[in-house]
Amino acid sequence: MPVPKVVIVGRPNVGKSSLLNWLARKRISIVEPTAGVTRDRVTYLMHEGDQYFELVDTGGIGVVDSDDLSADIEQQINTGIDEATLILFVVDGSIGRVPLDLDVSTRLRKVKTPILLVVNKCDSPKNDHEVSEFYALADAPLVCTSVLGDRNRDKLLKAILRMLPPADDFDIEEGERVAADPELKLAIVGRRNVGKSTFINALAQTERMIVSEIPGTTRDSVDVRFELDGKSFVAIDTPGVRKKKSLANDIEFYGLTRALRSIRRADVVLMFFDASQTISMVDKQLVGEIAEQYKPCIFVINKWDLGQEAQMTTEKWSKYLIDALGSMKHVPVAFITAKDEVNVKKLINLAQTIAKQAQIRVPTAKLNAAVQALIERNHPPMRGNRPAKIYFATQIGVAPPTIVVKCNDPKLIDKGWQRYLVGALHDMLPFPEVPIKVYYRSRVKAESTDPSAEHLDNEPEPDVSEMVFTGDEPLDLELPPDDA
Image (cartoon, rainbow, N blue to C red):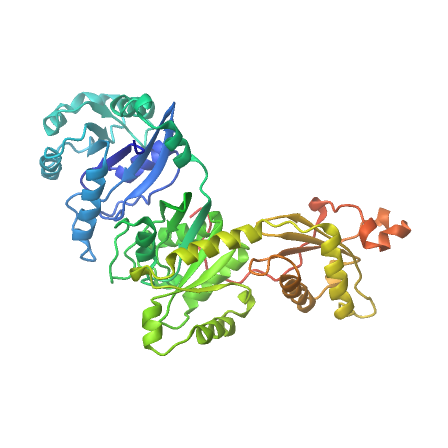
């Protein structure tokens, strides 16, 4: 039996997205007073007691979309209702029953799926006695809730569990598999209309995301689980990004914030480009965020059929990327056509390879041999009359590979030589396609009297708390704060 789906439906602005966030205890869906914010289905896997189920947020029934996507939103709602194990029919208890609630009720009477009526925005217990008019909407149990007042969350969850199939009827092993950490979390990022949602649909083998030629169709970051070769993955579809000064409203601003947050929580970032378009400042902004977070990344040239029509070659595009984004020349490049599913599976396989690279740990002796060879090839330049001395290097972490280089004074290691070291380590160590993070740390005074301290292999392990990072400064990007 598949994982039960609890689908939240109702007219616009009754608090459906707030309800999902409240039950999940996480900020999953964008919450705005503007009608029509939610377009795609947004899901979150819940585990209550011995039961797993998916919460599914849907767009408002009856919304008139500003971008003429009402039919697409309706299709997403229909799919959610068709797949539902239980429907939460949400209404607004603060203003009472309205005609559009009756329209939703009429629509739901055609389905045989169990319904739980949720009267939201009952911020005070006295509101619970004023909800009798809602019983006419559905022959279903009723629960009064208030997200704002944090009222009756446990009561609602208990009602949901009572109406779901018993856990004994559910394949627990399947639930554990779905709930388990996925093989990879892939953030799909890029500017607007580069084909991210089309790619997600190719992975999910369903019309999971609304696909439209209208830029900015996706407004929220949406996690989509899919399987490939028996392994579970999560693809995070993110809103298309444009310049901050061009953001039209708060919805787009928070969408941008979530896109950047998706980069931070991903294992591998798939940075999408349109093969028929040139690289923009927005592309560079996103690449800068990826670099600042030291995330393994793949540059994905989508719509490659259009690139070939324009007489482009893979060599030309790769050179173009290096010229425009030189600091990321270690990043591999993939060429796909998502709408025809060309090279989609190869891209996921490449992402797995990249993720494995980021987990490699190099033995200290091998790392020091590489660093010593690089010093002999190109010694750090002197600063004034003071020579820079490198004593020891060790890897202290993975994902990204993180290396401590111990020296006499980090200020003597100029940025040019730092870039040389990182570039050369890409070539000499077994992580050529993932970012390498390097810290420079001074030797503690107590060790200066120890003659063996001059020898790399005898150096004690570094104290991470005393490290001084003198790598490249983060790019000066005009990005929203993390807690926006």
